[in-house]
Length: 295
Ligand SMILES: NC(=O)c1ccc[n+]([C@@H]2O[C@H](COP(=O)([O-])OP(=O)(O)OC[C@H]3O[C@@H](n4cnc5c(N)ncnc54)[C@H](OP(=O)(O)O)[C@@H]3O)[C@@H](O)[C@H]2O)c1
Image (cartoon, rainbow, N blue to C red; front, side, top):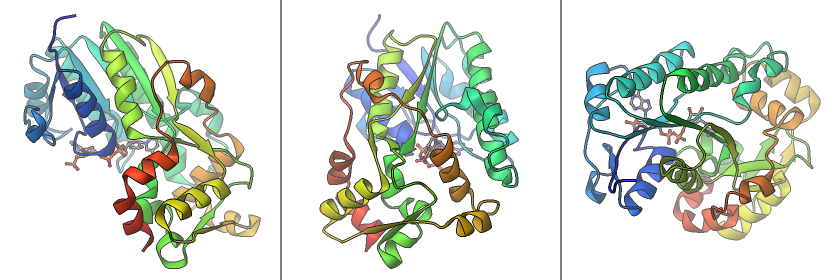
């Protein structure tokens, strides 16, 4: 492989894209991205709807990291991913790595789980459509990386959205079971997997990427110990779940996590030989964001 290679990294101002771009940079490559220009990346200003900007960004790149982003309406997510794919193929990009969500290819199985929640109903089919588009686009190599819950869900700025009772009541209030294993993914580990894929491994693989797995009680303990703030946890009653499931996408996704789940085999993930980031380690290195989400 010729060094350095240039990669088109979408979503590089966000958690996963930034981690991918940083890993590529640290391996001596040249990500082409807006957010990390100061680290040595090339700055490209653009939008997933702006075909000309996407084509400019993809020009001269050997690989593309496609961060498929949730949108309203959901169909726009597929259109935007297709724009990135089309621009990359037109520019002769050979390798694609795409981030979707665990078990996207099994979307049909989940249709009946919370049929009254439009966000939930569209979520997995949309991610599946994006995966299908990447797999059939004509890239020389493709890899689908499927994160479970991102560890960034626990810290600012998005923490209060995922755990609305955390700041006010110091509580993780969830529609899970006490023994549900919550699989969580460190963005840095997505970056490491993407780097391995771009450097020639993992071609044609769909990989469920989780870095750690804990119950909600264990999560609360780690959050409390790292933050120094006592955080409790509570399982919603079935009546509460019934009332909220059609109007609250988070409750719907927790029903999915409780009844289906990402089915991650952590031993298999470890088998790739990529060092994984524990939940405690992640929170310790993002303590400021954790405290902002709690206090
Ligand atoms: N949270 C979870 O637990 C979880 C689990 C599995 C999968 N996912 C999926 O992961 C994705 C979110 O990943 P993330 O947390 O890394 O995202 P993030 O931190 O919110 O960052 C999103 C990135 O995408 C960019 N972006 C969004 N819309 C764009 C557009 N129209 N044109 C150009 N750039 C655009 C943003 O750019 P700006 O900064 O300019 O806005 C930002 O760089 C979602 O699709 C979600 O479904 C999330």
